[in-house]
Amino acid sequence: MGKQVELVVYGAEVLCPSCVNLPSSKEQYDWLQAAISRKFGGNGVTYKYVDIFNPPEEEPYKEFATRVVDEDMFYPVVLVEGEVVGEGNPRLKTVYKALEKHGLQPE
Image (cartoon, rainbow, N blue to C red):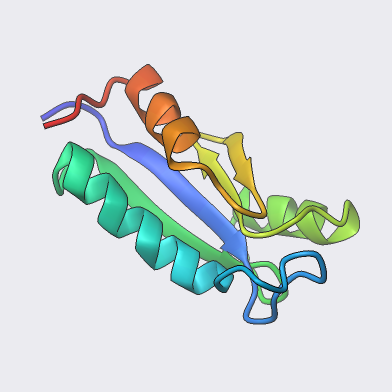
């Protein structure tokens, strides 16, 4: 098996003001995990969910969580290997493309 691709979702329990009709960040995180494992299988991706209002102490998670809040980004914000690939309402095609760019192949 090759290297693990890291997918991080930054979000919060409360919906962002512009995301009223969208699922919560946690629901989108769960949905992304399910959709990605259906397409790419269960291996190759490590998932991490970061609460932007209560981030872990470790970097770069804490720093980026602060950035999401400070810059009023629409959350959830989805990163693949540190690159923002979705904000507010992430598009599966964009996330898939980013995963493929890092070497994952659909099953």
